[in-house]
Amino acid sequence: MRECLEEISAAVELTSLIGVYHVPKRDAPSMVGIAYRARLADGARLEPGVEMLEIGVFPVDSIPPLAFPSHRYVLDEFLKSRASAAESSTRRVVAEAPREARPSPAPAQPRPRRKP
Image (cartoon, rainbow, N blue to C red; front, side, top):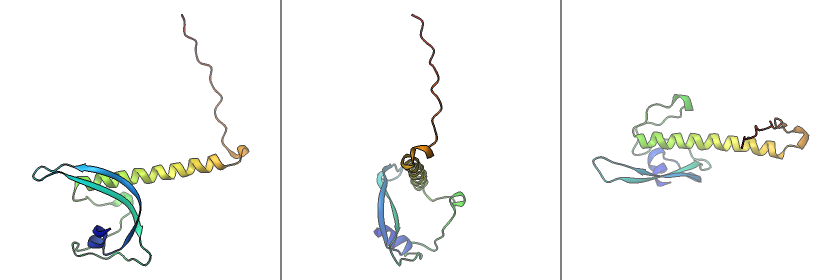
């Protein structure tokens, strides 16, 4: 949360853990990166922090190159988790639908028998 204040001058509320990652370094000791999903705290506004010249918000398909490969990896993990959450939500809606509204499964096909 301190990192968000430094980078984007905004308080955030953590909502979940994305992952814990080993970040290998060639010219320095390796690091452990911890990535969280968060949302802006009520009333928070994005502004460049003390470590930034500017900030921007981009559509997922237009994200510019990132400075570090580890950041690209974490962003990809976030996008996968977002897709999984959406898929899980869809499955939950189907599971909660009345039986007559659910798609019917394809009929089972007979399996060929093995010869002894």
